Picture 1 (cartoon, rainbow, N blue to C red):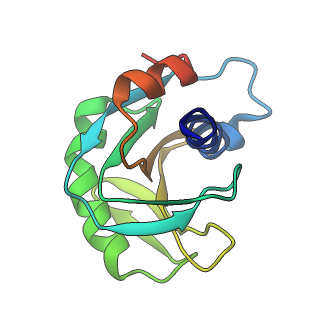
Picture 2 (cartoon, helix red, strand yellow):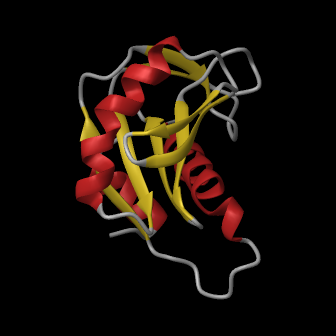
Picture 3 (cartoon, one colour):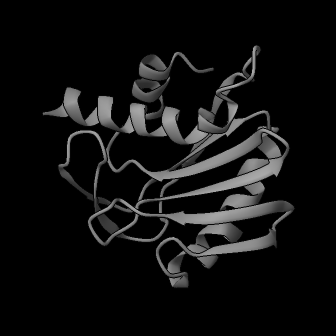
Length: 142
């Protein structure tokens, strides 16, 4: 179960973080910047395993964005996320061009994706008990 959960989180982060880069020859490196331990409490269905995940620990994953910028913006983005409708978006928040509250296709959300500039983006994913070390191993991230 834990391996499937880790795989689902890793796959979801990869899909969300690099989907816009499909046509790019050189992909920016995925960096796991850190975790927000007391973010919004959420229960959602992971897209890959279709299993429910609950918690309040959010992982900040950056692609082409400095981690200092991503971590500083995360609390602001999560405050917006709490009240945003699913599939809702906001422009010009915390230095990002656009942020979306992403759907799990089951009426809930456990992530937000934000465009910084061009292909550079940040993904905030509620990962619950999964540690940064476990995510780094699965994603091959730094």
